[in-house]
Length: 321
Image (cartoon, rainbow, N blue to C red; front, top):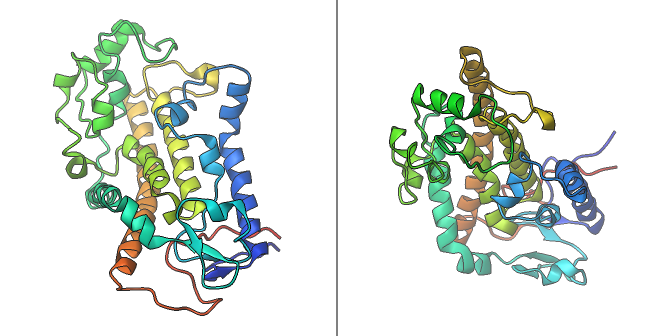
């Protein structure tokens, strides 16, 4: 039976953290295999490419494992990771840990802005009536499209779906790509300034953005949380394109015909599942930010003996046998 670390100790022995590091890299490689295979063959992938073009983070960043805040890596002072930014000597000889004061000093305002978006989104009821029409609004009455992929219904059929639908996109980074003719059809006018006040957890793009926020939080969060966020973003992206006006069957993606009652129902069911997963990830990201802030104000923390339970958010990835 494979042993696991339900609550990792504050101090991870070298064998423990190396096992976590290797398992993390293997999982990251498995999650990016389809993208890497297409890229090696010189082929574009209209579904998977988005995660590395719109989100300008490289697969190598996914492979870089962090234990999260409050964890000390034993016998790591001579390793390359000891020279990574925000790495600092731990309490034990030869150990390293996260330099939380330096991280707060360098990223405090950015982290506060991220927390405001995460908390605002998490606190609102989810809406399930958008049916992925943002992708349709991005090519409404537009002969040139973002993807060199045929349209399922053609341009006229696509335009007709937009004209027959109620568009209610709350996500600024989707809305800003609407065509000039489609933008006035949206029921709301999201802006960058109102993002924290308008994001809602049913939005597929808000769910994908959890990968962005997890990446920006860097060494504060454990590697397992980063990969969980990426996996959700990848799953959402596939649904996003299946429900889009593009015909992506050539990439193994069956259409979700949101122009039909059956397609709308299928989309809403998937949306509810993504919302549940996204809310759980939001809670974990918020907890990591809150704990960093509380430790900075001296509200939590203090000395713990080696082997004591780790701070909230530490990596709970199973340790291979």
